Length: 358
Image 1 (spheres, helix red, strand yellow):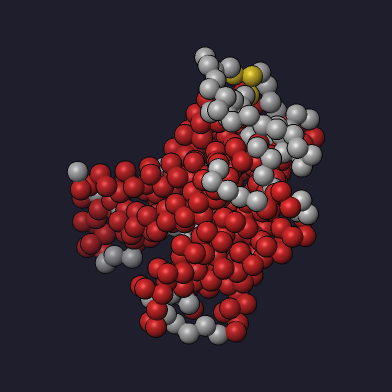
Image 2 (tube, rainbow, N blue to C red):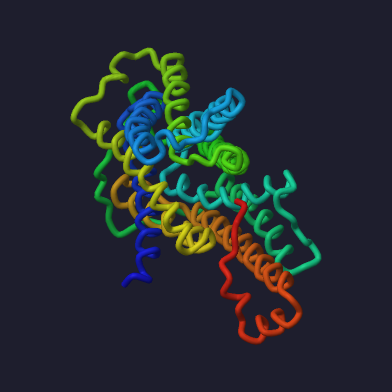
């Protein structure tokens, strides 16, 4: 049972991610402003994170310099404030299942940026190198398929239709036009690119400022301030700022607290099993979101969406496989000659957990 805990924890984290997408889509369908939702979500996350940072790091946290503070502030702007607002708008124009499918792009895009920044090497003459480059190509092909090909509708046997969309003048309804669908697909790609750049840059900042709880708390607080400025600039309707004991509050608390707490469960899984084990479970979030979007939100699934999602999953596994093989080769080649022979005979290299810079 002990050995299965990382598996159950990983599934739980991805289930939380699926719930976040479904709840976000639901409140947007009900007419809640994206910018106001992001602001309340970040406030909830800040209230949740700051006490943990004070209790577990407190005076042990590394002092913040002005340069580091500015870097964290800009990271929050790029990876949280900008990404969440773009992602929310994309969800309105597309669907929850497509939003979940786009998450599979993030490790691939992160890898591509890591290559551009020379944090990652690609040996194009080797099979693993070809697999990684091929994964990037398939990822882009999947995005194009999602955007420009719908195909026939795949009808499920029944719908629960728990959450109905409404059009309240804020554009919060199902996007019916092809133009909005294409725009939504590219907004999802844009949010994935912002998130991928954020992951790469965040890794660099954490090398000089390793106090992770404080780092995350400051990002949440910075994003809350930024999101407030965005919200008051875009949303002038006082009714949008009202939140009571309703579904909106549930979505805010869930996304701000449970999803934030899930990040630390994710860190535990990474420490136990490594990043590849966690990454290969990402498609489980897609499956759960598709089921929820079809049976709870009443969304329709097109053949093009299914094909595009499959291509994104293939691209993810292609990059992960290539990275895994290259890491195993590097681990074996770094051993002395006698140990290399022993490793090849016993297959030790194949059991080594690879690390992902992505």
